[in-house]
Length: 285
Ligand code: BTN
Image (cartoon, rainbow, N blue to C red; front, side, top):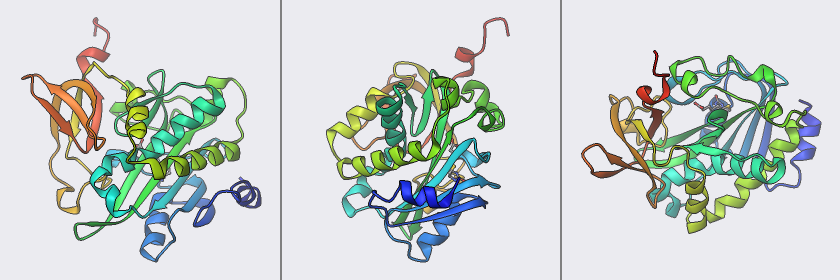
């Protein structure tokens, strides 16, 4: 990726500042350090290659030079967006969703809270990390990784979950090359478009209309937050709880509404959705 082209292509967007790296550990880590040093709102970190890219739940995320998009954006949440924190973490997923539908004609689904799937395959992952100052959020780092070319998948997620949500990539779906800078511009522009409408009914409706596995029985791993996903510092490192239930939709703050096996309706504020194994494995296994 060429830095001059990158800066030029994003120059019409009201970003706070932009840092580009050919090679970096993790754009989220860099953004986090930058935020602590006083980065402006909407500061963007882009890397061609990440050597220590991170995913949710402690997974690693591989960013292959020339084949992926990896970037993080720093957001200082307004006072009133704090009570709808799960919505804030979904900003990135909605931006990727809209970009793909509007500009590439690709329908996506959002695996709560913020993985972007195409036909049940993972195209993009989002790592939302809050920087806490006591019980206040200082900054939210939204890290977005998008699989662009064939080389970006295969090693993208090496864990159990990847078997249930195998990866896909945009050039494979479209069967043509995709300009990464153009895609990046669209995603950032869509994110900026949604941000002032975070509290609107439209935000929730759009998210809910793309919610993956609605009406399906899933397992939600709650409370586990190696990646600080929207949880107050005190809740990090708590043992995970597994909740079985059927996805009903979203609660007003963006939490996931589930009907549990006992018939109770609960809302999960932070966690990870998994399909229940018995529903994903072929019967003969
Ligand atoms: C996941 O699916 O588990 C989330 C993956 C998030 C990957 C992105 S790539 C840019 C940013 N930097 C990181 O280290 N992670 C996020």
